[in-house]
Image (tube, rainbow, N blue to C red; front, side, top):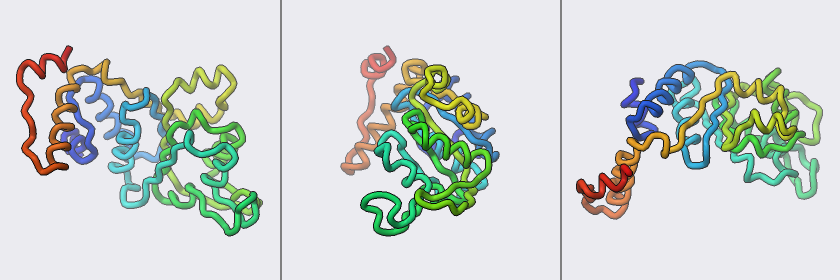
Length: 222
């Protein structure tokens, strides 16, 4: 898949050198099964990039399971990721299938990985090292064949230095580290993105797409 087709399919708009480098990396790493760590500020499109990596991989016909680690309560994240047996915790009335089972054969995208509690980090490291996990409340071992793409909106290397993220897990996840630049560092992409937004709004309301005049274009570029 060439760069233009990749952009059109996954809605990654822009033509700046920085974005072209990201797209080329997606094309290079997509077909591999290597774990990927995406780092960038909130709003830079980490989930879009994860979708594109999955979409050009050999796993593209299987599920992409998206998990926001920062949105799951600390006491539930292990059961959400790895599943739980009936009665494993208060309110657990039936066996729960975890996200890693759901992603088997496909890809799991762990967003906001820096918010993951230490105990869950230990379990995740085991998956990366062996492909094995156990449901909460059970010692039975299960296998998973899920490619892991993780993302963080902060510097995980600094989190390692600060003792809030495991160093061994960081190095396992960051076999490939892809830094996603914010829009202020690729200002030439602002106009194409704004035009895409206008087209999207126009289509939603079945209206003509507004045209940007020279003055508006100049203001956006400043």
